[in-house]
Image 1: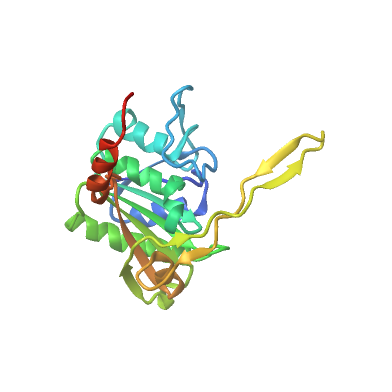
Image 2 (image 1 turned 90 degrees about the vertical axis):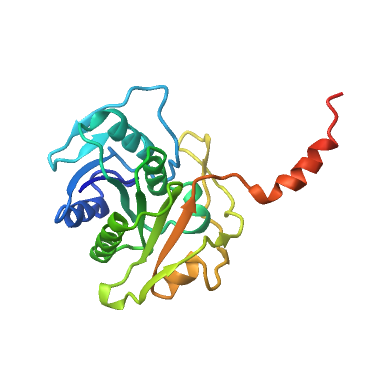
Length: 251
């Protein structure tokens, strides 16, 4: 079994190192990851600059690009053999709710799925992550399960593991994405030269976090597994929009 591992925290992040170690116990792994932290890069591809891939001292391949760049490059030109699966993570911090729209961790898995490979994104949900060994063990269990029973072709699994010792994990829950309130305001400052600078504000607090959501599962001590559908078409509004466009005049 050949597994391509990537992330958005960079090739030196603790999460990707322990993930590679654990998955390497039963699979042939290749790590292709950003050369620095690229959290929040989403699904961006680098189109206006060349990509450079460098093999680091730990054997990982670092790329001067985004998580999507890493998976795309690996699958379409860098690797001699096609991997059987893409595993992205272990992310430092959760990727819950609306986070999936911005997450480079989720984006790396998405790119793997776009290129025809079963893919999973794994995040450790906590403010100061410690129990990477727990998340790595969970990843191992799910990867072996995926090997035998693959989800539909247009699906990735977004996995969030509570930052707890393995003995305190209560089990698994299949969840939907919760929702957040509107993001906190942008923070305004000035640099040492008196010029205005801005920091993007914190994500909004939980809004829909009830039973069945990824928020609720993680806060209750369960591993949240959310199947994400890559076809973003909203089919249920076809009829409404069809009637809506009939009333539009080109004049």
